[in-house]
Image 1 (cartoon, rainbow, N blue to C red):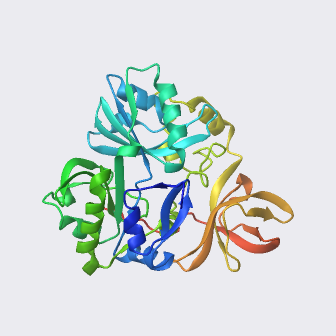
Image 2: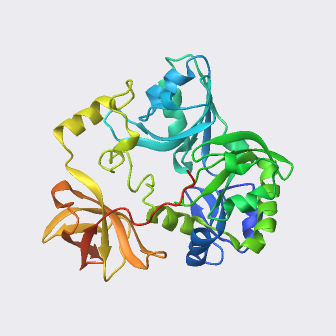
Image 3: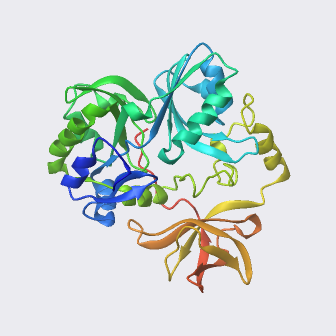
Amino acid sequence: MEGLKKTALFKCHEDQGGKIIDFQGWALPVQYEGIIPEHEAVREKAGIFDVSHMGEVEVVGEEASDFVQYLVTNDITVLEEQQVLYSFMCYEDGGVVDDLLVYKYSDKHYLLVINASNVEKDFNWIQKNGEQFDVEIKNISSEISEVALQGPMAQEILQQLTQEDLSEIKFFYFKEDIDIAGVKCIVSRTGYTGEDGFEIYTENNNITKIWEKIMDVGASKGLKPAGLGARDTLRFEATLPLYGNEISSEITPLEAGLGFFVKLNSDDFIGKEALVKQKEEGLKRKIVGFEMKKGIPRHGYEVYKGDEKIGFVTTGYFSPTLEKKIGLALIDIDQGQIGNQISIKVRNKMFDAEVISKRFYKKNYKK
């Protein structure tokens, strides 16, 4: 693991038997006990993830609202203070720079939470496009650590460590300066698993205490530490996109079926003209769900209709919750009807698959 960046929780992962891998230049646990038991813990009880590798960019200034509105595809004018919004940053051609969360403190102060693999690229993009606005843009990623506590027992576990009534934090809202085990934190009711839960941000030197206290009080509730493997199977079952899979510089939000987060009738934003044109002309391809009886689909596998290649798998797994071999694929739009029979090429062999609804798993968010 020499040469890799380490989060402030690295020793905790080692002590708890985490299997450490190189993830986008970070030394992070892919699993502890195993992907399936960690996945099941989150679905049935609770799991805790180290997501300190995620990036955080602060936007402050008189024109912060105008700038963020121009930067992202969603409409931030609907946001209340202490509300969170999911959105995309797009290139001029409609391809995705990144997906992100926008935290609104006030009209003059926003926090953008971006993907670890894209921090440098994103920050340069944000800075470049902010030059014409009266804003100060600061990359604070190296100062902030973050854990995600996810699952139906998440609130009950975290409530034992704070006097704040966590039931008052609504889905996709946050509160700052919450005292968690004597540590000041930002706590948002957000996550990447399809379950209720919280994401907790604090300074690097405080995160180990937060992790250990949550582990202590959660032990009797079935809480498990969870790694990157379970994080991916959980988000996939809930049909939550992953940058580089379902969205990328080559795949637009509309092709990914995520047009809800692209407000084409709102103010001008980067990429709007290209996305309007794509919608008007009609999509040529789209992300669909599929199921296989034999073989397990993986990212990048080719998809065929007869002898014709029609696309590729963006994500595929044996679903621990559904106990089915399912996947998402970007294919020609005229082959995307539910019930359509297709083939997935697995190690030079063709396996039958059927297009199904992408709603693999019903999300259990607390509204």
